[in-house]
Structures are given as C-alpha cells and as structure tokens.
Length: 303
Image (cartoon, rainbow, N blue to C red):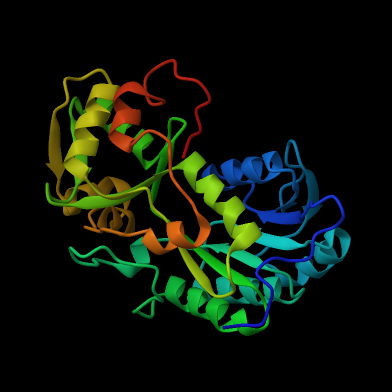
C-alpha cells in the first residue's frame, strides 16, 4: 500500500481546486456540477475558449506542452480527466503530463475495451489485454506509488434524456420499432449520469491511490429490454428487433457497432464498499419508460 495520503491537504475552508478536462461533455458536465455543489472549485481546461459557468484556463491535452502554463495558473489540488480518448500515443503523452504536478489524478476510462467478460460480473481488476485504453490505465496505476491516481470505469451512461439510450429512442422513431445491436442475450451494465457524478465526488475526496472504480448501478440489463423501452419512449408499444452488427456498422461504423453488441456484466461491489457509493436514480428502463426520455422532460443532455 502506498504511503500517499488518501486525500490531498485541504485549505482552511475545506475547498479543493479541481482542474477539469472535459467539463462540457455528457459525463464531465454532470460531474463538474456535482463537484461544485459539494463546495469545491472547478476550473475548466479548454482549447475552445470560455466554458460557461466556470473559471477557464487555456490548454490542450493533445498538446502536453500547453499544460505547464495551465498548471502554474491554476495550481490544482486535483485533476479530473473526463475527456474523449484520441489514440494511445497522444493519450499516454497527455496522462504523463497530468502526472507532472504530483497532485491526484482521477481518470475516466471505459468498459468496452475489456471486451466480452463472461457471465460472472467483472470486478474492479486491472485490464487483461493490451488495447490502447489498457495501456493508459496501466500507466496511471503504475504511477500510484508517487501520485494518487484513480481510474473510473463508467458503465453505459444514461439519464437527463442523453447518452446512448437517446440514440436508441431516435432509432425507434426512424425505424418504427426499437432496435438493438447484437442478440437478445446481449447485456449492458448501466449507470445514471447523476449517480456517476456522485462517484466522481467520492473519488476526488476519498479514493485510495491506484484504485479502479466501477461506475455501475445495474450489472447487466438485457438490450432487448432497453430497446423495447426506447420504443415506448418514442411513442411505440414496446417492440424491439435485433439489428445485425454488419448492418448496423454501415450506419454507425464498425467499431461502434461492435462495441454496442458486446455482452458485458460488471460489478461495482468493491467500489460501493470502499466509498459508500449508493446509486439511487431510476433504473434505465424506468427512465426510458416514464422519465427523462419522454417528450417534454426537463433538463435534457444530449450525446
């Protein structure tokens, strides 16, 4: 176990200054709002100008040389990376730069890179393959003896009318029936974006160095149930049909279609036990059927 303290030193008011990468994204915007509501200060790193609602500092993670000035200007207590991956070389260079200030880094990973994990729920273990995302995770975990690094793996994220489920509602409108990629046996782990945002707060404040956290509320929801609920959200009667991967790839791209067809079941038992995290928002099928995906719902976020 590392001798790095589980939380950075707080100032007299208990406020942390958190440098946020990806504060305008679906996950990042919800997480940044939750961190702010907790009483911490969020500073957004941006390559496109001012981020509404937050002090903003210029910087581009794909150009690590631009980050030094940002770190000096902000002097963050914590860095949160919730941006979109680019490629392994660029991502590794960016992560290396984020480790330079020596402050805790909370990195947003994913689940699709782990591939089919079998029927037994996959736990908060290191990656077993050598994909680009796995290489980035390993680099972060290897640095835990000198920097408090934390990896967050979100499940399929939903809520506020956004994420992949919003696309599925659009498919139902377009095709006149709910569609899912893969087979009826395909399952997805899921998490509401606001529950996930709460996990980021706990990760920032309490997660131990070298921790992998699973942002998972439901371990494995059948995609056929999600597609049927999307059909109801689109005004249908709850029908669903399979969309073969080869056909879906024509419209969605091969990589995305293949990922959507992955049968995955994930556990968050260790995460919940370590941090006391308890998801409490409506389940995905309920949210699609009677919640934020219905026409006229409040506070939508798009993909």
